[in-house]
Length: 80
Image 1 (cartoon, rainbow, N blue to C red):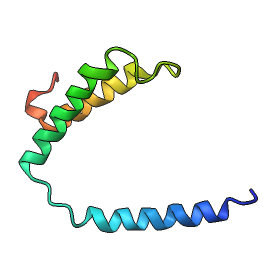
Image 2 (image 1 turned 135 degrees about the vertical axis):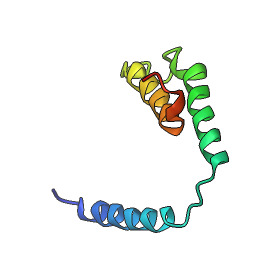
Image 3 (image 1 turned 30 degrees about the vertical axis):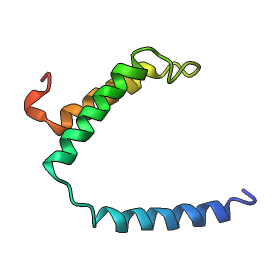
């Protein structure tokens, strides 16, 4: 595909940069709590109304992914 080489090169560079940055992140309990709360707040403010995915109709998948993400942070509180 003509013209894709520059995008592939940029994607590889961005991936390497992300990998390097991930190694330096300090994950604390506060970060987990904040992340889980943010995911659930997003569900209650935009995903549950369907406004985020008005045309694609993927709001239920996004809704479930946010709840699952919050549950992964606190497995003791999951529905399983």
